[in-house]
Amino acid sequence: MHRNIQSDEELCYLSAQELAVAYRARKISPSEVAGAVLARLERIDPVINAFVTPNPVAAMAQALASEARFAAGNPAGPLDGVPFGVKDLSPTAGVRTTFGSRVFEHNVPDRDAPIVERMARGGAVMLGKTNTPEFGWKSPTDNPLFGPTRNPWDRARTAAGSSGGSAAAVASGLGPIATGGDGGGSLRQPASFCGVYTIKPTFGLVPMFPPSVVGSFVSEGPLSRTVRDSAMVLNAIAGHDPRDIFSAPRQPVDFVAACDGDLAGLRVAWTPDLGYAAVDPEVRSITARAAARFAELGATVEEASPGWPDPFPLFHTLFYGLVGGDVNELLGEWSGKLDPGLERLAELGRPLTAFDLAKAQNIRHALQLTMAAFMERYDLLLTPTMTLPPFPVGIDFPDRVGGQPVTGMQWTAFTFPFNLTGSPAASVPAGWTDDGLPVGLQIVGRNWEDPLVLRASAAFEALQPWAGRRPVFSD
Image (cartoon, rainbow, N blue to C red; front, side, top):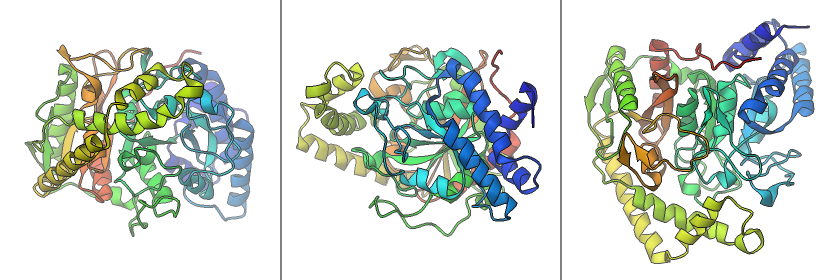
């Protein structure tokens, strides 16, 4: 069936939930949707560079297989026929997986990562692999192999990262959902910069393989344009996998159903700066207004923060020591061919000792206890997701925020602490700057209370919807 570009765009911006309903009613078909999204990808992706290895032939075959299941009255699950992108850090059987590195430029795995395996088992249609910085090491998504992913709202700016390709794809109508991982903010940062939703699950809720050297920081999860689409993905991907010894058994919870309900009686803490962070004034203003709206949802909102000192030196020690050690193994053969920042990371990590790492781990444990004590008093913690709006492509780390100098991870002060604690943390679009750039609000919960984070996200979404706003692409 032929459709014009305008109707194709509407098809491409249907949510996963809307697609599931339409497929079951036989109003549209998975191949029709896959064809529209793949055509849009071919037209738009050269502008933003979200996909590095498109998978069009296999995607259409998967869509046709989905149609056959619907015709037989036997769909594989709620995600059957729904297009999605996969971050290029997740291995995909038979599809190139480069990790954004020349080292693995021609690598074709023979087995899927658990998150990919479970999406495929549910009948989802894999559009291809999305861009990431080399080995996911930094926040702007660019690498020596494929270059930068650009922000759909302003192509001169970064989509952030390291799941920037996935976030940019979702924002641009290139699939309603995509997968990513978050070791210091790598889901929440691009969600904020690209104006989409994400939840970093509690550490261990979603299995991960192969393991990362900073595995105890990392949670894999979804990016989407709506809260319930992410909840649908969590239903598919959560639960133990023997390849990941940290993965927990599947919780007896329907994450989509958990999105229902109000926030009456909840105790919500709001902090604009965690007590120490430099924050852009416009970001502070937008997120403060969004946080205040939780009172309209029935919650009691008060300003408070956990009270820990700025943990960026702790994070740097662990990150430089662990990631730097991994990179150091590659330098003999690949020196000069890696992202220069990765080679600097190895230099910074080399002087660290095992004693330094042990001390940092002990400080991390103290941080976790501080967070647990704070969350005995509050059900949720709200912060800005990012300290600043999207910044220009070509910068690894901004050196100033709101006119104040920052160093290292201080520019993303709100994301990495909750990798250290393992807490579930979502980013919801809170508003747009005067320049039309997205700003996210972070919603943090107690460990294993992902359903409450989803409920709070969905309640805010109903109060202040965002999915109808779309970036503009010229033909």
